[in-house]
Image: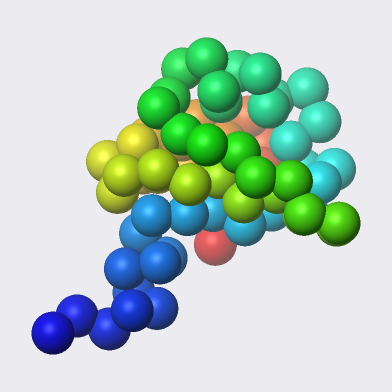
Length: 66
């Protein structure tokens, strides 16, 4: 059985709120993801394929995604 944390890592990106400044609409328009706002961060949730593509998009736009 897969480790739940590894599944979670492949289906979400957690970023500080300021990291998506100017990019949130682009992420929502280009990828089939849900963006959840918390107090001090965003969680981008989607399928592993969409999360990988969104991570690449964010990295190309200067956002460090771990």
